[in-house]
Every structure is written in C-alpha cells, then in structure tokens.
Figure 1 (tube, helix red, strand yellow):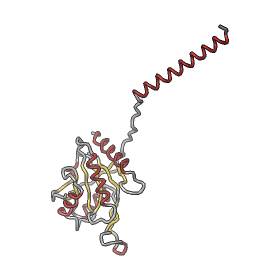
Figure 2 (cartoon, helix red, strand yellow):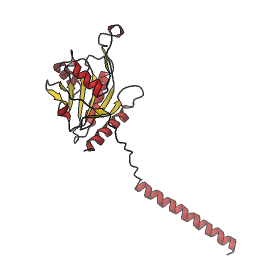
Figure 3 (tube, helix red, strand yellow):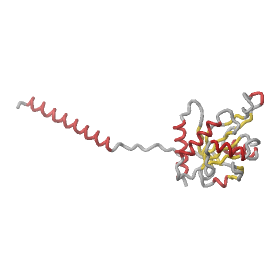
Figure 4 (spheres, helix red, strand yellow):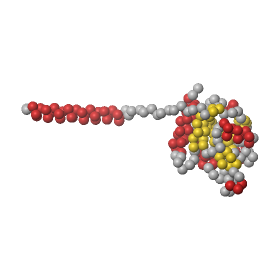
Length: 219
C-alpha cells in the first residue's frame, strides 16, 4: 500500500472517529440536557407600608399587623367599575388558584368606592369570583385610611373622575391596574401591570408567583 493510499485511509479513520465522537456527545446531551439556572434578581425595597386598620368582606378588622409575617399581593378596584376591574379581579382569582397550597401568601383588594362598597357588597362581589376568604381580603373603611394605604404606601393611583368626564354613571374613578407585592416585613417590593394590550398574562402571572416565592424564602 502506497504512502498516498495509507494517508487516505488514515484520514477516513480520523473522520469517522470525529463523527462517532460527535454522535456520542449528542446522545449524552439528549439524555442529560444542560441545566441553565434561571436568573434571579433580588427585589428592591421600595418603601415601608404604614400601619392601617380596615374592614374585610366578613365585616372583620384587618390590619397591617395581621399581614406581618406573610407575603401579600394587592390591587385596587371598585365593584361598580365599568372598566378594567372585572378583568383585574378575574386575574387575581387566577393568581389565587395558581398559588401553591404550601404558600402562606395573602391577596388584598382595596376599594376606591368606600362609601358604596360596604362589607356586604364586597362579600357578594367576592362570591361572584369564588374568592377564598381565608386567603383573599376585600377591604373597605375610612376613605382617608384607604387613600393613605393605596396612594402613599402601595403607590397605587386612585382619583375620582369629575362628573363632566364620566362616560357613564359608573365611570367614577381612575385607578391603577397594577398588582403590588409586599414582603413579610411589610415593605413594598414590586409592581406588576395586570391589564393592557401589551400584557401577556401567563408571563405576568408567573413573574408575580416568582416574586412571591422569592419573598417567602427571605427571612
């Protein structure tokens, strides 16, 4: 066998060896895919939530102290809302159902319409959405206390619309459509938009669930 022929055979063998090695690597990767850890960024401390006492849909008092030691997610709506409130409440219900059974997180919905939204009305509203009263509180009470909690502490917008700007009799308020997350120490830690054409709810819901899990793991 000449030197050229030997060189050709050697090249073929090396090539076959490389192909075989690549195939083995592919089989190993398919059986044991690489695990890429999900990036986790610590949520900033936006600010403390000031003390409050309001009344829930069962006509029971709920205070900041009652929520201390638990992570909670909050929003603001009103039961006569002709705008985004029903969608927000459906999404909060979806969040309620998605929380793990082992989670101690709570959900809090404030009303902008405290004069109308009594505990009895909030109870009926909560019932329409199958809200679990053990986890989800609908809060009403003194309008100043509600405003201080919503605007000053939770950074939620809630403004009464002037009569001349209302599109119908129930178009009473302009308010935030975000869900905010509070940690076990009673500190605001995150805000997540819940409605809008650009919002992909499954992804937004997962972001909220991830934030809740992260905060529950904190001391």
